[in-house]
Amino acid sequence: MNKKILLIIAVVASAALTAHANLVLNPGFETGDFTGWTQFGDTSFTAVDTSSPGGIPPHSGSFLAYFGPFTDGGIQQTLTGPAGPYSVDFWLAADGGDGGDYINVTLGGVTIYTQDGSGSFGFTHITETATVGANPVLAFQFVNVPSYWDLDDVNAVVVPEPGTLGLIGLGALGLVAALRKRLV
Image (cartoon, rainbow, N blue to C red; front, side, top):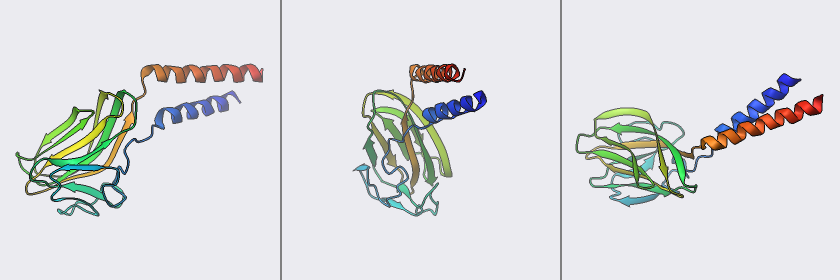
């Protein structure tokens, strides 16, 4: 019986640690458009579709976003969350490009990822973290002439602080003690 209780507590604690909700609206562009995102700058050669102009399929789902502006352009979204550490991850591919092309990703005005054009490559998982103020803006800025950057499955979560993890652990220990006392 004690093993069952400990297993239940472990599952609940694990769910509490991993159940961080994605703060990004329309993270995989599955609405078929930029719903939830605000486009800025040069929006030419930018769209949501079932594949990129170079034929790269979505990382997952039915849609991806692609960006091929001649000058700075991109998308942004204000996340609803407290000040503190955030983890951002996304899937990035390129249909081509050269050294004059680039992607720059910022969160709350802090650059978390940047890359110059490096030719074609398939979807690559990018994960970055930053500590920022409350309700940060997540922005993806692109230039790619005459080709495209491809973006899919954007995820942003608040990283639990060590103190929060400690409180979860203490709560679990208290629950174990209370259940043991009750069973004795």
